Structure formats: structure tokens, C-alpha cells
Length: 173
Image (cartoon, rainbow, N blue to C red):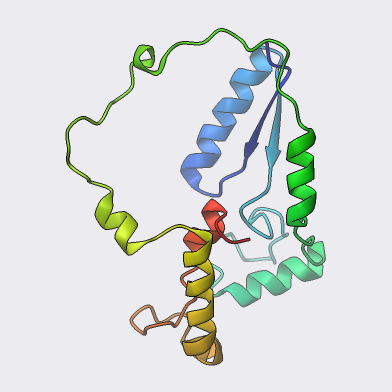
């Protein structure tokens, strides 16, 4: 069996509860759990909070960012794409894959029919590297100069970069 399970840490109350269950179950079967921080520059639970601040909303990004830089230093630079590619090329699977079930045998929900329920979502939020770069370029053309003033105004076009989803799924890093 597996000696370790790796996962990317999420940052919601629900995910913290789920991840604690993962750690407990894996510990019971003597499998090491390794949490990785990959979706944010800083883990929101890492900085020490000032006296009287009990968590919750920081107001805006900058107080959080300044606190993290002061306490934790600058975030690490991203790994170069070529280095990541070479690392993945060198990785090898096991000599023998463990037995598993077919998808049909997993007893999970299956979507049947011809309805393209995901089409409106994909039309509204295209998720390719080209879409991410185009979105970023448009933000720099139309919103970047006004970002400091307008960043908390979701009602204003290009008040934010709209890149969160791209950063989250990795179409832009």
C-alpha cells in the first residue's frame, strides 16, 4: 500500500475539517500525510495575529500581505516551467499498479443525457492559458492604474483582475 499521501491544502472551514479527517484516518493506518501549500503565496493561518485581532476578515489584501512579509519574509519564486517539466519527466510510476475498480463500480453519480449543463459556465469562465493571458492583458490595459482605488468595487468593470480562477486551477501561475 501507500506509504504517504500528498495533497494541496485548501483554505476554507470545510476543507480544514475534511483535511483533519484525512490526517486522522491516514494516521490510524500508519500512512504519512503531507500537506502542500500551492494555491496561495501565504497560508492564511501562518501569520501571528496582533493582540485583540481574533481572525476573520483582514479588510483588504494589503494589511495581510504586509503582515506576512514582515513575519514570514517574501514568498518563494515559482519553479521555472522547464524545471517542473524535467521533474515530471523523471518521475516514474510503480512497477505494478494496485488493483482498482472500474468507474462504474465506484457507485458515484453519473450524468446522463445530452444536456450540456457546463456550457454556460465554460462560456462565462473560459479556462485556458490563452484565456488567462488575455484576461491579464485586458486588466493591465483597463484596470491596473485604478486598482488601488477600485479593488473593493465589484460593480466596476476591471476593478479586479478576474484572475483568481486561473490562478486556482493553474492555467496561470
